[in-house]
Length: 227
Image (cartoon, rainbow, N blue to C red; front, side, top):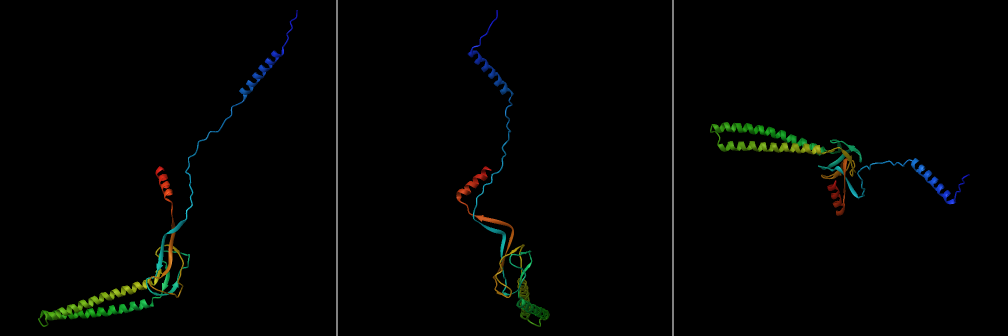
């Protein structure tokens, strides 16, 4: 006796669904999981930029002015050129000051001779006063004449020093290393005491001066306190 199985549509659909489900599970299990690269954030300073209208000034900016009156005989530098400390920038005529130096020196020598005569006179007067040949008033006058000549001698020494200083002022030198600015006077110009010959700037370092609002200033102070 033979057995016969009959397959209904419902049974066939169930079997097919089971087969598909098993196949899908196998596919999911076989697929590897996705991998992602892990990184750490880097902490860096943030630069905040703000534009301002500023005034730029050099480390040193000095006016070169004359100390004496005279004609400019020679200009040793040019505008915009670098110079070294002690370098001669301008030469002024010094003939008048040299004549004054010669006159003061001659006067000084004359007073030295006069002082020697006063010392000899004082010595003789003191000798006579000790012997009561002349009165003490004569001795006092001799002392006064000697002191007067000494005072004139000091004045002559001062005149010599002033003449030498004036001669040194005819050579205008750079006070420090820097760059020459505009030169308003040219060779042959007559300059008076205090006239501006040029300016010299030391641009090794410069400073920027600008204005900010009160709110910006407070914000900057807060950032500094937090930092």
